[in-house]
Image 1 (cartoon, helix red, strand yellow):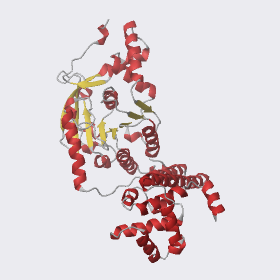
Image 2 (image 1 turned 90 degrees about the vertical axis):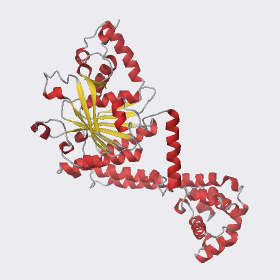
Image 3 (image 1 turned 45 degrees about the vertical axis):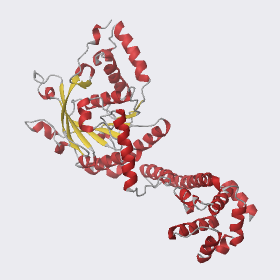
Image 4 (image 1 turned 90 degrees about the horizontal axis):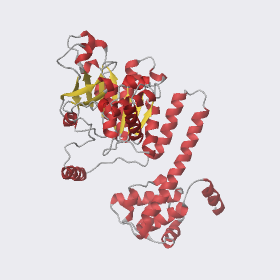
Length: 456
């Protein structure tokens, strides 16, 4: 029996000593059981006898009975497994061989770690089985493989009922922190004062949809926001998924916004010596920002989730930006039903925002119905191909620039209206921004325009 256990111990991650020490520590100091039970379960034990003992401890705790050598022996007897675990002599050995009850939580963490490693081995076997099954579509293989691996870590994350007293206490402490800091915006500031007044900044776990017709400047607004939140002192870590533009085009726009050099000059490499200096300095500043760009075309929600998890693990993650939602793909399962496909994509983005506890901002295309009305201002019904976008989003903002439809207008030159038409957690309304077309940058209307071309 000893040789068999030793051989198994070498092949499968397990710490029999830690399991024995943990159970012995609980018998020495029963009050430690509740702390350990908050992160450990019966199937985390490698030996079945230890799982039985843990189950008996649970039963005693649930009834409110005292935990000691006598009550545990009687409970195991009632469960008809006392002889199977080695009898009372084994319980005596657990107590006698435990170094100290002080380190009970340390022993528990050792048991937990080896349990996770065993689950990873099982997950790898499942992934191998999926990989060699030629009849399964590759999208399903990837999805199921990811779920198998995710289940390993997800099993350690337990969402339980929270007493209202704890919830109120946590909220009170957070509010006191904000009041002491003098912050008027609870979330991450957008960089636009009027918009912060409506949204309260970007909130974690929110899905924000920013929609408009082609040519309105949706991508430019998104990149302006990316710069606003990534710059010090905020330093937000931003992932940008672009399916309409390549990385080089995105960088070109960011450089233009940062330097004030017009887009057409950068495209033709027609810049002066002074502009070249600004270009060099801006390139250095942008390189230091925590921005990450992915230009995979027709990316699926599963691929996006995988990349975001990896990015969050390696660098941290605060905001995910998607440009734009309707260019994503849901895979072959929805290829014949576009409405269901968009519904699946919007729902997946909301789930990802909650899972990673980040803000997700996705641009979206509006239907042509806007063009057929005399009043071209967007409405929620204009969201293209699916009403589920409105349902899943915590906030829906529309971008409207009158000069797109009336190029000769003198009443609203360079004015951009951002219409907050749905806000799950607050008020709605419309704000005005200034849009500088030459560098595709949005600014607060009260900011003075500076012509950088005259700088020495």
